[in-house]
Length: 327
Image 1 (tube, rainbow, N blue to C red):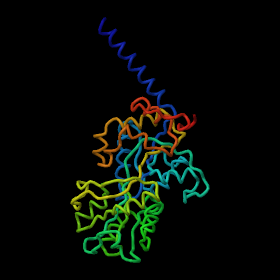
Image 2: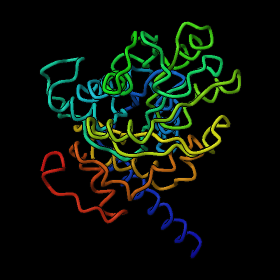
Image 3: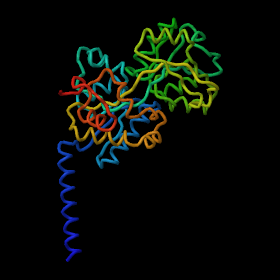
Image 4: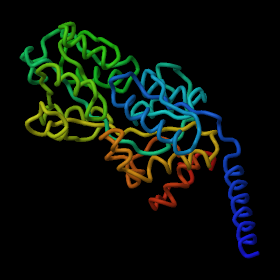
């Protein structure tokens, strides 16, 4: 009799739990996509990784999607063509202001902050055989690969190079493709803006000798004065090519969610990513900065209510109501 009663209790608890889960998932999409960037870049590796992790943990179909990067991701998430995406703060600010080149005049305010990812350093890579060891060594009219059109690198690095007095021919393409062009002598340098280690750079240094070019203190200061970036140092352990830390500048990256997604869905996805940093670092080393305390690095995007709730409960975040979508 006691066993029967206990069994009945367990069944009742299981049923109530099942109902609770079902209620909690009301309105959840049947599947989701995460807008990333081109293959060979950090966004694709990092984004596909956390997309697969969330899909596995939540038992829902989902994955990363190759895109043109932050600008396109803001557009895709704003329209709902992608549930999630990844962006840097510069392109996010431009998209909200209606100056995203993909849809000029459209204020993309329906893409909400989801969680902090990592900082994107800006760095330059050249073949060692080119003799280019500094920005000042870049020859007049050099062919420079700036990544996919509309990416963070393509949006900001050409302007940075112009600020530093570099005269160049602009080239676009996926990071892996540009790496191949550099090896084939079709490019003089590649200007990377991606979380480190950049897969394409790691692949290059396995295949050939390269120079990873840092900014001088004067160049760094000049760029920081002109653009929404901060001081950054690429650790010498990042690449086997580096013998000492490399001076750089960086811009914060955030995951974004369509603001109309159910709060419970976004909160659950954030919990999967933010609750186990070791698991995220296993996906990509850049995730060492994917930490709850970095929630305050977002000064641009309104927060998704589900994400804001998670950070308030788990990171002690004090997010003003006017920075939370719908409040």
